[in-house]
Amino acid sequence: MDTTDRVLLASEDLYAIDQLAQKTGQPAEKVKRIYVVVLARLHSGARIKNFLTLLASKKVHDILREAEKSHM
Image 1 (cartoon, rainbow, N blue to C red):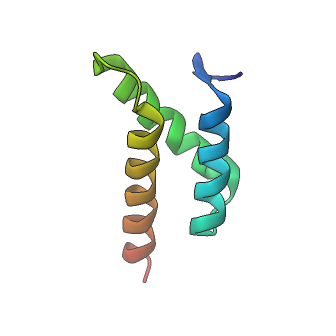
Image 2 (image 1 turned 90 degrees about the vertical axis):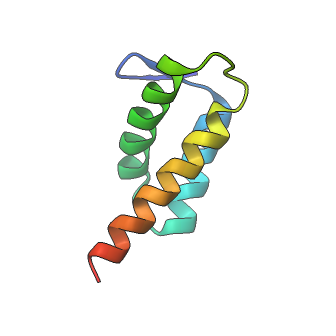
Protein backbone atom coordinates (compact mmCIF):
# COMPACT_ATOMS: atom_id res chain seq x y z
CA MET A 1 0.00 0.00 0.00
CA ASP A 2 1.07 3.54 -0.74
CA THR A 3 0.39 6.35 1.71
CA THR A 4 -0.39 9.81 0.38
CA ASP A 5 -1.45 12.58 2.76
CA ARG A 6 -2.62 10.04 5.35
CA VAL A 7 -4.78 8.22 2.79
CA LEU A 8 -3.82 4.59 2.27
CA LEU A 9 -3.89 3.63 -1.38
CA ALA A 10 -4.36 -0.06 -2.01
CA SER A 11 -3.03 -1.77 -5.12
CA GLU A 12 -6.45 -1.45 -6.77
CA ASP A 13 -6.37 2.33 -6.16
CA LEU A 14 -2.94 2.60 -7.78
CA TYR A 15 -4.18 0.53 -10.71
CA ALA A 16 -7.25 2.76 -11.04
CA ILE A 17 -5.05 5.88 -11.02
CA ASP A 18 -2.82 4.42 -13.72
CA GLN A 19 -5.82 3.47 -15.86
CA LEU A 20 -7.41 6.92 -15.45
CA ALA A 21 -4.13 8.60 -16.42
CA GLN A 22 -3.89 6.48 -19.57
CA LYS A 23 -7.56 6.88 -20.47
CA THR A 24 -7.62 10.66 -20.00
CA GLY A 25 -4.11 11.44 -21.19
CA GLN A 26 -3.40 13.28 -17.93
CA PRO A 27 -0.19 12.93 -15.91
CA ALA A 28 -0.44 10.20 -13.27
CA GLU A 29 0.59 12.61 -10.49
CA LYS A 30 -2.27 14.97 -11.34
CA VAL A 31 -4.75 12.09 -11.39
CA LYS A 32 -3.35 10.79 -8.10
CA ARG A 33 -3.74 14.18 -6.38
CA ILE A 34 -7.39 14.41 -7.44
CA TYR A 35 -8.03 10.74 -6.64
CA VAL A 36 -6.66 11.05 -3.10
CA VAL A 37 -8.93 14.01 -2.35
CA VAL A 38 -12.00 12.28 -3.78
CA LEU A 39 -11.20 9.01 -2.01
CA ALA A 40 -10.72 10.76 1.34
CA ARG A 41 -14.08 12.51 1.01
CA LEU A 42 -15.86 9.30 0.05
CA HIS A 43 -14.12 7.32 2.78
CA SER A 44 -15.08 9.77 5.52
CA GLY A 45 -18.79 9.47 4.78
CA ALA A 46 -18.98 5.84 3.72
CA ARG A 47 -20.66 3.18 5.78
CA ILE A 48 -19.83 0.46 3.27
CA LYS A 49 -16.36 0.81 1.83
CA ASN A 50 -16.35 -2.05 -0.70
CA PHE A 51 -16.93 0.11 -3.77
CA LEU A 52 -14.90 3.21 -2.95
CA THR A 53 -12.31 2.54 -5.68
CA LEU A 54 -15.04 2.32 -8.30
CA LEU A 55 -16.85 5.40 -7.02
CA ALA A 56 -13.63 7.41 -6.73
CA SER A 57 -12.58 6.41 -10.25
CA LYS A 58 -15.91 7.51 -11.69
CA LYS A 59 -15.81 10.84 -9.86
CA VAL A 60 -12.20 11.56 -10.87
CA HIS A 61 -12.97 10.68 -14.49
CA ASP A 62 -15.92 13.08 -14.42
CA ILE A 63 -13.76 15.85 -12.89
CA LEU A 64 -11.05 15.41 -15.52
CA ARG A 65 -13.61 15.31 -18.34
CA GLU A 66 -15.26 18.52 -17.12
CA ALA A 67 -11.87 20.21 -16.78
CA GLU A 68 -11.03 19.21 -20.35
CA LYS A 69 -14.34 20.62 -21.62
CA SER A 70 -13.78 23.92 -19.86
CA HIS A 71 -10.39 24.33 -21.54
CA MET A 72 -11.80 23.94 -25.05
